[in-house]
Length: 200
Image 1: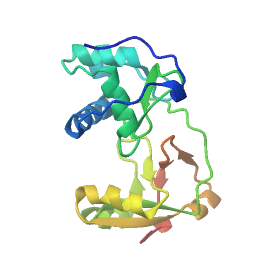
Image 2 (image 1 turned 90 degrees about the horizontal axis):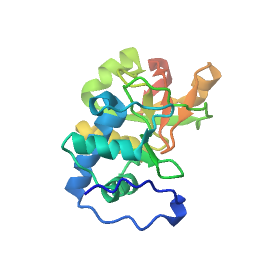
Image 3 (image 1 turned 120 degrees about the horizontal axis):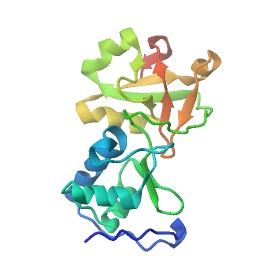
């Protein structure tokens, strides 16, 4: 049974997050990624500026779609997701994916000054294309970059042995490229030409 009552307590006063088994967390996370990043219209949802949707609307839409999610499960996914892909607003009544969208939405991001170097993890099969064309955002809004080597290695390892590129972010900023930082610490940029890349 879905608890659709809105939460209006501050995050510091929310009840403890319940334990949800890992397979269920993964399944819900993939479902949320699909509908909060790529196909909100499939559930009859519209992403507001910043990518926000009302929690109540999401839970009700998921139930109609025969994929019921409880509020407790939603809290667990937000709190326990390894990459912190999702987040609530301070009232707990809105939820969003922090980045990775292909759906048309104004993510309401402010430019940010990146560290001098950033990292991008990928698979060996993409190396030649990247060295020719640089890092392209493809269907997403931005290219995703990591602030540390270890995170980039984990991202690259999803498709086999990882290859990590070092991004000369300092020179890119000097040359006029604009960077953004999502709430969960992922660095975003429109494109990284190959001239700013080297293999780690």
